[in-house]
Image (cartoon, rainbow, N blue to C red; front, side, top):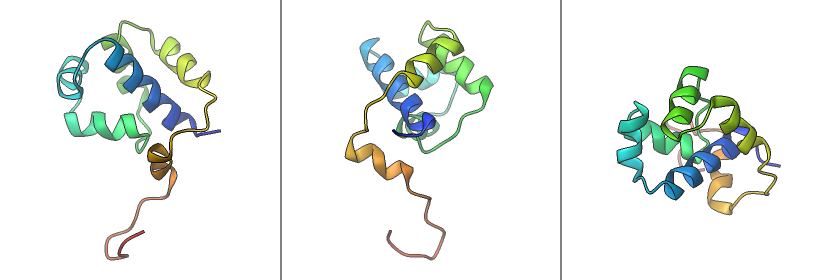
Length: 96
């Protein structure tokens, strides 16, 4: 099973697209930077509770609902999302 941060990212992306938001527009509504929203949706960041709450409210959900949706995602994860599970490269280490 994918880590919760990756399942949370999938949940955010799915709810955002279902609501008809572009990533850029949604980031503005949620009060986070567009690049950070991309990082969240890929599961490459471990967001703080304040961020989870802001994102959930922008989706019309409570933070607990958003986390529950992520917890219930039992899929193995698409290969593109598995990249985010690797530890980040350190500067100067070359390609992964």
